[in-house]
Each structure stands twice: as structure tokens, then as C-alpha cells.
Image 1: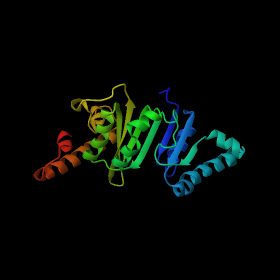
Image 2: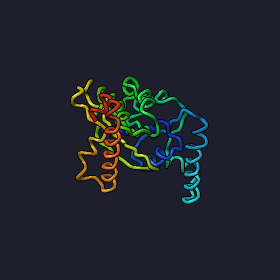
Image 3: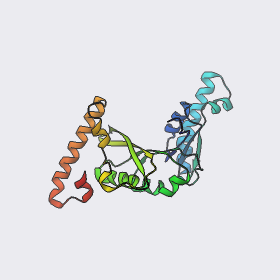
Image 4: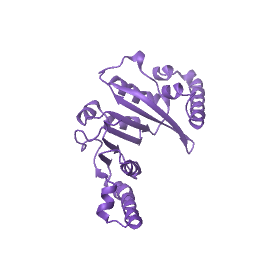
Length: 223
């Protein structure tokens, strides 16, 4: 979307995502934020300076010119606290639990920074965990736009994209469930992603089937 000019990565850790995004030249402002100064120093900032040193050595430019070619701001903060109005058109969060994500992306904070899009990848891909995230966002006027799935080290990760709508509330009966966009794209998605999604569904359906004797909660029944 050409209207989205700023992007921020919360919990940036190694900083690879904002560095890669800055290299695309598609954004006016790119930032990586982490709550730990030690993580920023040892991870994101160390990697960033490696890239700058590479640009200096390969292209023969000055350090200042290299930094201007790869403009990223890294700073220590708790969530969106230090993100200014208009500096977070897109907010990315990966590698966090759903509860932690929801504490960061509250409706008030997203409105304050004028966020228009969310790119999220929780650490736990169990349907009941993702439903908490999906429901909370959709009930606050966010629409599910797309999903991707991949398996890394025997664990599935589902990435989801949400966009801000003018609706202040979405009725329960119209809320999209985790995996709904992946299911819609079964005939068009890549063979690798299709295979992983089918395996994911079978795995969790068998899990829920076994749990029926203990009783499923309402979210699990919906899924």
C-alpha cells in the first residue's frame, strides 16, 4: 500500500527485519524496538553495523553515506510507548505470546500512533490461542487480510495481516477464524504452504478430538 510509509518492528531482537525493510527503500521511516538495551546492543545494533561495514568495504563509501543508504532507527522501549503519531503506519510483532501482543497493541495505542496495518506472528499457533488474538482485533475494527504458515523445527507458525477498518465492532457471527484465509487459498497457494496447512489442520483436529472427553471450550468448538 503506497499510503503506508512508516513501519516499526516491536521486539526486534536481532534487527534483521527492519534492516531488510530499510534496504527495500519502500518506507520513509523504519524502526526496530526492543525492551532490552542489552538485546539491542548485542543483536540489532551489532548486526546493523556489520551491514554498514560491508557497504563501506564493498562500495568504498563513508560510514555516514552507508548509514544514509540503510536508514533504520533502533531504540529501547516498552512496546509502542516511544512511537510517535504517524511513525507506525505498519506495526510488526513476531516471536511473542498472544497475551503479550494484546498488551502492546491496545486500541488506544494503535489509534494514538495512527496504525493502519498489523503484521503478527505469535509463538503459539494453537487455534485457541490464535482465536484470542483474532477475536480481540476484529472486535476492535480490524479485518483479517491474509495468512501464511510455515513449519520450523517441528513447530508451525502462522503469520497474519490485519488492516484497520471504519467499523468499531464486528459481530461474533462474522468473525474470521485462524486459518480461514489459508483455507480460502487452498487451490491457489504454493504447494509447500498448502501441504503444511493441511498437516496443521489434521494435527489440531486430532488433538481436539482426543480432548472432547474432557470438554472443549467455546473457542475450540467454533474452530
